[in-house]
Length: 210
Image (cartoon, rainbow, N blue to C red; front, top):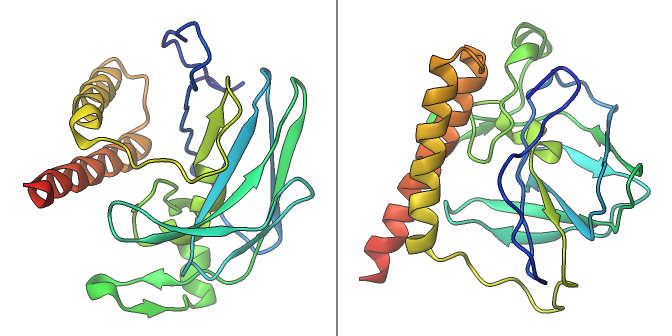
């Protein structure tokens, strides 16, 4: 990750399979803000996710109608499809509305303006993120698919057994990056909390399958 952008150094296997990359950002929020992301490589499809109870709506010329989907942690997200995007194309998303804060115990409340101003730099992007994660999830998670055209039917749920080592490896890589001073402390804590939440969801899924 650099001031100019990010790069994934993982290998892209040959063939007609699909490669998925998840990217998260932490940015201050204000109603009506627009976020644009330009791609350097062809992306056949892009999905933009926002939690269904966030209080924030999305709009964009390239966005299709949202489809609700329940994730492994029990939360429901609206998925906005977009694409395909050619190299140099940009996907622009406008976010509007007053976000709803998820308080302890699962209760919901609209934040006061003073609270929003005081905490403007603490919006958490990742799925299942912190108290203000609802609004910024909109453009925090991008699923890039390259390769074969996606089938019309919904995607199959990921296999917990295959996801488990990936999550553990991601946590280890994140810890190593922090030790090298490559990750800011706030970004480190946010990303690690996201990975730990994903690990817990995988363990719960494995227990439920027994």
